[in-house]
Image (cartoon, rainbow, N blue to C red; front, side, top):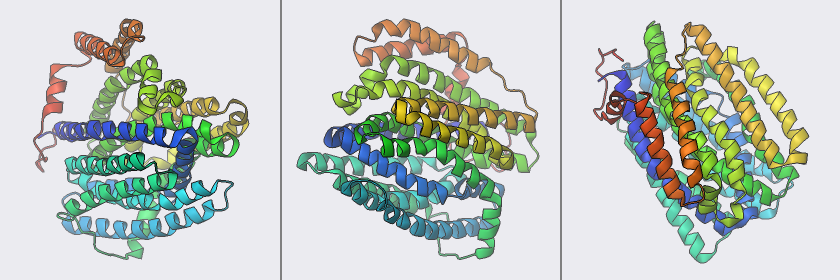
Length: 485
């Protein structure tokens, strides 16, 4: 089985799981927004953003580096066992310390009592999500992403059942947040119990290896730290300056972004060990080919997503979150631009890691973060969530361009824009045809848009029968001697 087909098969499985888990997630968001209202959901968004700051700060780039190291040592069982056990131990220790300190610091913030309690209630969600990243890395290395998809569905199902119970009994913010933690624990347990069959998660305090891993990962960690400033500071600044109801409206649309961007990161997680191995073996052409094909695939997905959302955003957010969140549709029209940018940027940012060019990206992250944070402080007090949304788009665009430029220069590759250009053309035609249906049924509008897009994509050969067949391949594994793409 070729690497390209293995990536396609794993992505297809993830996509199927993501469709189910996203559907459940949408229902959960709808139940939570209706149960908690604008202010309550704003508090949930604030608590989530606050803890994410600490989770990202303690990451140190180790998660991405872990997957890269597994790819480099693929086939060396002794080395893989050492990497998994020592990194898992490190993550448990770091998460236990940092995530436990976060809610205590939250007590010093100018938040309401229930919001402060929510920080403690979310502890389980963040702790188990952090250590789950190591387990997912093992599944990525062994191309067992169907397990990750199943575990996410299980976790979301547990969350759905819990939120339904909360809705029936009219529970408030803190019980709902506790349920979120329970869902995260369920997700972790499914992943962990399966991964134990082919990975070593035993306790392994290996300080020398930790130093080596951190020495390699710190540029990624610094990049992540600065990206945190523009990725999460918007919600935090909003929570300090604007009413929690406004944070709730912004948070509902932002939640859509967060759900959608898990897809490119899951794909890139599978791609990273493959391209890391290709680069280590000196297979520059193969590396560039995989990046180009990944870029083409995401372009086919991103353009209709971004353009189509401009038509249906308000109706979609009203349907999902309720009439109190109609304005979230206008915010979503802006944030979907950032979502599309993140899709493309993820491919090239993981290429940067495989190429070990993280240090070259540091100036981009630093400048972008400083400028964006200054923008948040200057404009959010005046323009509120609108400033937060547009600054998010601008920051993601700057980082994407930086990733692309450095990747292209390092590989000396030329990006082929043919497929992406055709995808854009198909999306524009889709918009012109589907826009008159905007006042009709939401599902009718989506159906018309999808039919037009696929018709034009096939007619222009942006999407071909061969590409579909690759996505439908479900054979598992890659023969060790197969280097075809």
